[in-house]
Image (cartoon, rainbow, N blue to C red; front, side, top):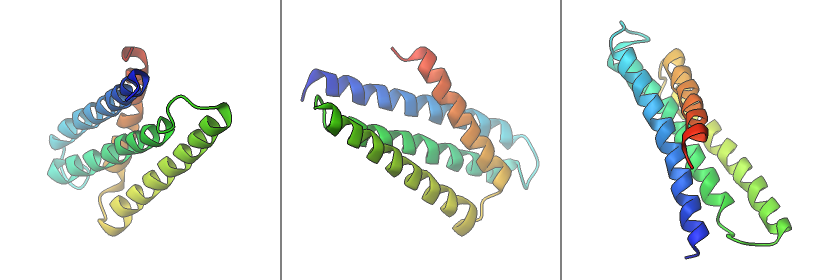
Length: 127
């Protein structure tokens, strides 16, 4: 494996980790509030929202860095397909969380927002 590929995978996992940690922090805070938005149900819903976004980051990174060092047209196709796959993944995950599993919407949204903030923190921290 090319050294750059290994570094890219580590970077993607670092961003996803920051997102998961941010979601876990929100879940811990929600445990202290009363249901339906708090308690264990709210914490689980926040974790689900953050997990959907963090796993979307992993899906994006997996597809984006798959070609390795390649010509620009191939990298552009990888970027477009990574973006489409990520949004399909996030859309399906949120549909499952909010529709099929019927988690409380506010905690799911708070988990999604926390994961996005975790990504921004990762941008500032990951080298």
